[in-house]
Image (cartoon, rainbow, N blue to C red):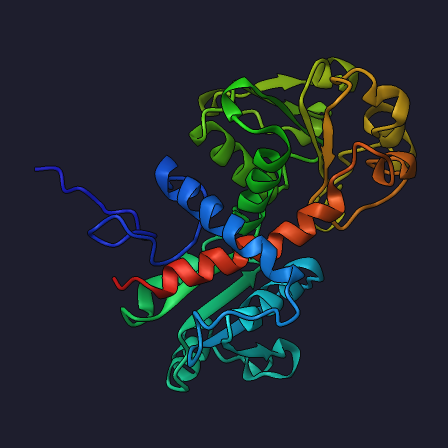
Amino acid sequence: MVLYKRNPQLNRHGELIHLLSTEGLPRNTITHILDIASQFVSVSDREVKKVPLLRGKSVFNLFFENSTRTRTTFEIAAKRLSADVINLDIARSSASKGESLLDTIANLSAMAADIFVVRHSESGAPYLIAEHVAPHVHVVNAGDGGHAHPTQGLLDMYTIRHYKGDFANLRVAIVGDVLHSRVARSDIHALTTLGCAEVRVVGPKTLVPGDLSHMGVKVFHQLEAGIQDCDVVIMLRLQNERMSGALLPSSQEYFKGFGLTPAKLQCAKPDAIVMHPGPINRGVEIDSAVVDGAQSVILPQVTFGIAVRMAVMSIVAGNEA
C-alpha cells in the first residue's frame, strides 16, 4: 500500500500553514497570495501604515545568514500587520555557544512565538523547524542554503504580473549563476506553476545545472540568444561564497560574456522589464545604465516585497495544522 504524503506547507484542508518553497504550491495558492498582496500595496501610501491583522502575535526573525532587503522587509511587513517583532541577534545568541537549532526553536516557542521567519545556510533547515513546532506556530523560509527563497520568488511573480499581466503569453529569461541560486529555483517553480509560456535559463556551462530538462526550461549558454524576444529578464548575482573551485576565469570576463548592458538588452523586447533580487554587483552581472534605466523594475521589486511578505504572514497566521 502506498501512503500519500501531504505537502508539509499545507494542512489537511489545503490551506497554507508554512511557506517553505514555491515547489509543490498549488497554482490557486500562489494566486491567492498575489491577490492578497495587491490589497496590501496601498498600505505604504497611508498616513498610518498599519493594519491590525497580527495584533497580539509575535514574529521572530531568525537570520543565520546576512541579509539587507529580506530581513528589513520582513520586519516592516510584520510591524505593518501590528505584530510584535523580535530580531534575534544570532552572533550574540546561544547558538554561538553550541545550542542546537531545535533547542533554540524550543526555547523561543516557550516565549510564545507565533511565526518564525528563518534564513539558514543549510538547505532544509526551515523544513526541520516546521516538523517540530506546535500546530499554531508557523514557519516562513527566508532562504535556505542553495535550495529555496520562496518569498523572493513570490515577489518576483507579483512584479511580473503587475507589469506584464497574464503569464500564459510571457517569455522569461533567468540569467547568471543559476547553479547556486535559490532564487532561480523558486522563480522556475513559480513560473511553471503559473503557466508561463516559456522559461529560459541563461549562463555559462559551469554555472547552469545539468538537470533542468525535467523542470520544463530551455537552456542557453549565450546571453544575446537567451534573452532574444523576452518579456522579462531576471539577472542573478554571482554567488562566490557558494562556489568551490574556479568556475569562472574572472569577473571581468564574466561581464564581457554575460553582463547585461544597454546594447545587449536590445535583444529582448522593447518593453521588456529587467529584474534583480539583489544585492547587485554593478559591472559584474549588470551595467549601471541598465540598473538605473527605464526598463529596470528592481526597486519596485523591493517595495512589492513588503506587501507579499505581509500577505504570506497574514495567510499562514489564519490557519492551523
